[in-house]
Length: 358
Ligand SMILES: [Fe+2]
Image (tube, rainbow, N blue to C red; front, side, top):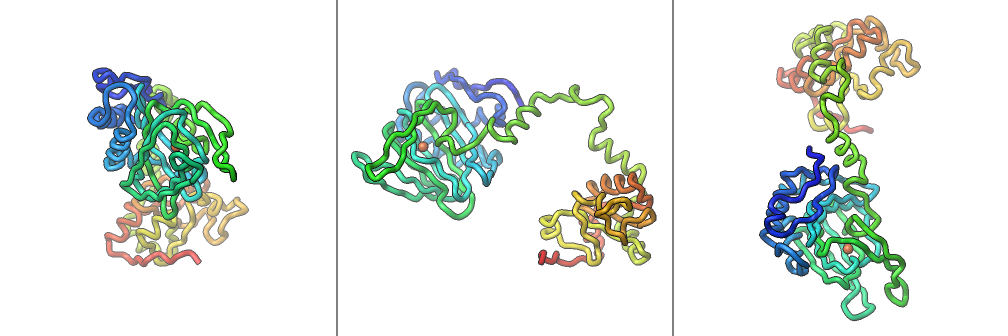
């Protein structure tokens, strides 16, 4: 990931040179270039972009899932957003909406705009032109609206599953005024400078933990790691060096001889894959506390130095690290299932659908 400030490729050639996206937002230069190329075909190279042209941008981007679908973050607590493009003439944003999330009443500081629903459903309430009447429209996927600089609206998740939308503004959003809905109509409450779309009830890009982590990772180079820190591959190889791992047939044989198969897969994985009859399910996050003979949270029947524990995960990677840790805390017979549940099932050994939790 580049940490450079990026202006979408070719923008300068079309006279759209602008500030570009700030670093750390998690949109790769290649993706910014692809978005910039799409915009280059739809909007004029400079100056104010008309609402209809902005609608072509939002609708066009909404239809190109490959440009944004993998970037979306679902946050149940606060509306999420990410800038996809910024030039001197317009900015474009990706927004994600969950049930109950909305924007509050606002205008766009004199910018024209458009938004297109890409997934799910949004409801827009807006001040009807020329009066105090409030209109309402429900927008489904592939539907887009455009508005001029006087538009005041409140956009909300429209029910059902998660929603995603693409928003564009021209000139780029700089300020917004918020309004209170009163019996006398919409009354301006405050005007604030903004660097985010659709109001303050959102958190996105650099404001999210994910983006902060992405920005931090962008600065990280292998040189920044301690010299003696093993890679995950080295850690795995080291762990396997101390284990007598068991293939499924061998594991099946020792299970009838007193060994215990411990399934550390999460519920979602067990539900999707199935389970092994008789396996003991212990979550990976509590494994050591359940099996350390000194732990108050131990399972007495299993937390023994001589317990023959065979740790199983889905494919036999996480189980190796777990088994190595069990050996470190004294379970000298602990090992793991080579190939995990997948290999067990492929060998034709007993499985069954996972029982839902009671
Ligand atoms: Fe808005």
